[in-house]
Length: 336
Ligand code: HEM
Image (cartoon, rainbow, N blue to C red; front, side, top):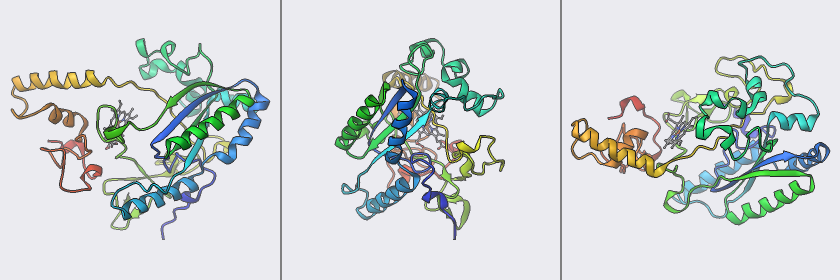
């Protein structure tokens, strides 16, 4: 029997291995104005934090119910999940000491300690994208100490949970520096990224969390093309690809790193580029004469809007195979 012990973890927060996968979500960027009250805030928040065990069980029941109804979301199954992460400054404020006093350049701890504003140049966050134009996390603005994620299936549940979190924050002198809506797009665009393409198809499977395919060990059962990755690539303290234990301290065990970036997508600009490039390619006779903007855009992404891979379905975005939209058993090297 394969051991899927990580599915039962009550030490790893939800949304690390078991994704929240909610239509409605909000990120609250927080600053602690009073260390003692912030510690009380955290103690009270702890029982509201979703564990991997809760989220994994919910997601399994949800998928099962969806299969039984032929793909509809089961309305009777709904939940509200919360997770929390801290910046270096946040941990320092809560504990009263530097969590990583001696860091070595080039290590994860060092990057975490420096924070994203100091490292902006390395990531190409310059010019319009430089920290002085950020909505949060800029070193000149209010510091961010924690990020609280709240996610729900029903919009009214999210609203109620947010009201509770705003109240809890306010009584404990936890300032909400910024709030980011993290919900899916509305209507037909649900589950799609802003250019209009199905998102969230390729997700890595995790050893000790996802069942391997008995025919093809190393790959996830029921999801051809999805490789199983050692859990240590996501969770501190577990085995990594290189097999080496993490050099992070014991208290960080079962933790993870939460990256928050706020990229902009210039949707009209992107589609205008597709149109302009298509014209050039057509006059250079580099593409078939019947090629459309959709045709070229699909080749830029490697998938049609529906998610169907170009490598398997070069001529149309809709395949008669219902699994095509989530097909991962492809190589982008074979795009036609
Ligand atoms: C505006 C920004 C982005 C857009 C529009 C975008 C769009 C997409 C789309 C449409 C897919 C295919 C659907 C899927 O597999 O979920 C995809 C896959 C993927 N994206 Fe992005 N993405 C963006 C940013 C990023 C960033 C910042 C990263 C990594 C840091 C990333 C990493 C990936 C990976 C690893 C895949 C899976 C590729 C595979 O099938 O092997 N993407 N993206």
